[in-house]
Amino acid sequence: MNTRIYALHAISPLHAGTGQGQDLIDLPIARERATEHPILPGSSVKGVLRAAAIDSGWSDDGGSTTWALFGPDTSQAHQHGSAISVSDARLLALPVQSDRGTFAWLTCPFVLARLRRDLPGNALPKIAPKPLGDSKCLITSASILADGKNKVNKVTVGGLSMDVYPEDTITDKWAEALANVVFAGDTLRPWMDLFVKRFCIVDDDTFTWLASNNTELRARIRLDSEKGTVEKGGLWYEETLPSESILLGMIHYSKNNRITAKDTWAKLAKLCDGTLQMGGNASVGNGIVRMVLHGGAK
Image (cartoon, rainbow, N blue to C red):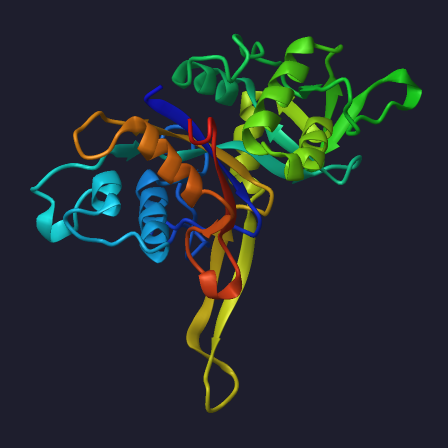
């Protein structure tokens, strides 16, 4: 298999900036132009993996595994390409405060349909949920999000109240499949259960609105070291994806004579073992993520 899914689970707030301010936000996060959904650029993911390879002791020279996987240094880029192509990591599930169950992992039919289109195979259900009406949602049969007062199931997330459609088995299938991708492994098995219980599919417009308006906005200051006060112009606002955000992307292997597919997936799986730092503001603890390569080292 030449293409595999990778998942990113944000352990701390994640800031992948655009390099320019927008409206009142000095440092907004990167977004897809068409959907306005948050992304983490594939170039950033690939750069972090390359740095992790070098930190692991894989030399960065012409005959190294690093060059074979990620391509030569810029000055030698004419020699050959990299063995892998890394797509942008697109937002799959947005954590949003919930009146029941503390918070919900929200997604929408469009996100799942596009994921299903881009990632054929047996990892995901064969069909995505049909488009939902306004103020409607789907939850799993094990969900802890619904308020069943007066025998009318409602879910309230991000201050929005939505009616729950009657049980739909496709929701259970998607929740379980995605949990297996993002929280694979015995040590994370309790998190699979947490994900399934908090998984919620809302309509496309509601998801897009929440993805635009329910990110974290933090005020940052720079102090004058002598006066102990805020420097002039030293106040700015930056946007981050909240902790527990989940993004998915693809890694494609291109056949070549420098490294085999088997070795490529084995090396990448090793790099993904543990946590990585992605995006900006590493010094204040931002960007700590778990990265999972679905399919492991096979």
